[in-house]
Amino acid sequence: MAAVFSLPFISLSTPVQAQVKPCQGTGTDSAVQSPVEIDRSVACPGTQSAFAIHYPDRVGGTLLFQDKPPLDEVSEHDDVRFIIGTGGSQPYITYGGQRYNLNNVHFHGHAEHKFAGQPFAPLEAHFVHERATEPKGYVVFSVLIDARTFQGLSQHDRLIKSPPALGESRSVYGVDLGAMLPDSRVTYRYTGSLTTPDETGSYFQPVNWVIFNQHAKAHQNNIQSYKSLWGPEGNRRELQENDPEPNIYSYH
Image (cartoon, rainbow, N blue to C red; front, side):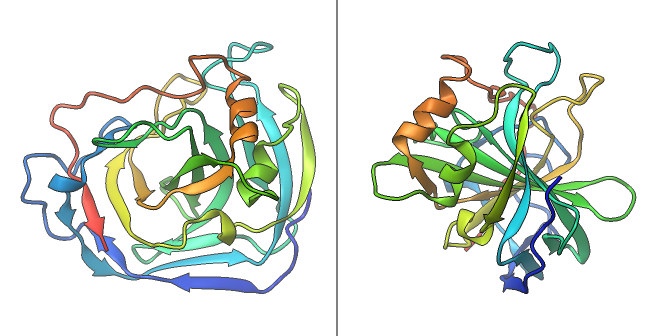
């Protein structure tokens, strides 16, 4: 596995809501099954708490076309993921006063989450941060990606363009993680689950989801090529029906 470049950290500090006060809606703060639809009109105002992103200027790692059961055939549980190298500065965030290390960035097409009244975005990137100490826990950034025609490649394009064959991998260097996040820090948060099952078929809970309001961009040719790896069904989990639905917290 390629080493992370030993470069200075970029620390992007921004306040986000903390689910300290119960939402006055009719939903639940307990973990639900993900993904869900985000209805901005009924989101509860979040309260301010410390939140910081500590990503190196550039990182290296391994780009893997993950092959999960059933093996040797493309299924909805497979994805293309950028696994962060272990030889240099570790990208991490602090959330609720705890450290979460960035483990990987992977992609689903079309998107799994959606905003009410809008179509599904063609792609969704998940930044999976795992708690540095026990018990196990996750914070997942969700970045919806729109298709655009433009010159040059975005950082998302670098990871979805010409992926390795199923089950294969290759080294990737100099990825700018910060450039993969939207400029706006407006987010919507809820407590849910992972959207890909583990080896036992379970969807781990609880997961702290942070859905960015602003979309990122990738070239439409690369998005279409990525989605074509799976055909019309894509590599996504369908929207989940939860009863009660989760409380969604917004922070602007």
